[in-house]
Length: 140
Image 1 (cartoon, rainbow, N blue to C red):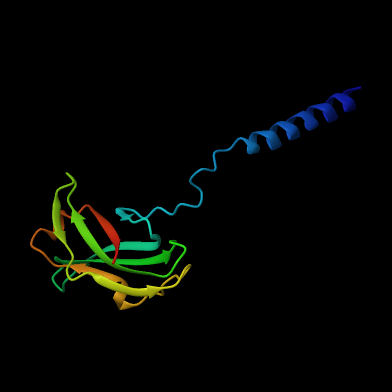
Image 2: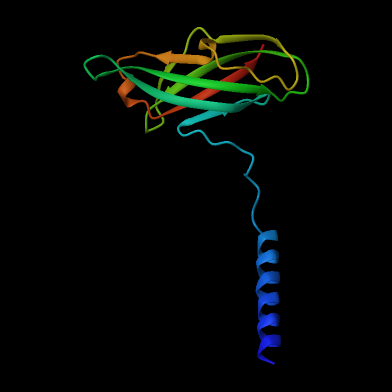
């Protein structure tokens, strides 16, 4: 009798465990999150992004480098420009990169590879105040 109760208890625990996994919220599993960097675009998605504060020999921050990789999600060949906007913690715009990075005739599904072209640097006086960056991809 005790063996039957134990078997029933184990089966109930197993079924409960399996069913509880079915109700898990999977809404944002495939959306990558890059700390302090967002993308505004309807034609490309951000595959990779990083923000690094670069120090000079004396230990002072001398520039910020933002690296990124994007994928064409437009479903067609596109040409677009990418700029980066640097903001402080109060969401005040500190700087916009110039000139924009130009991408021409990028095929559907294309993912760029990591090169110096995918890096935007900022060396302004207020670079120590940079909190977050918005990368914008605008179709030409």
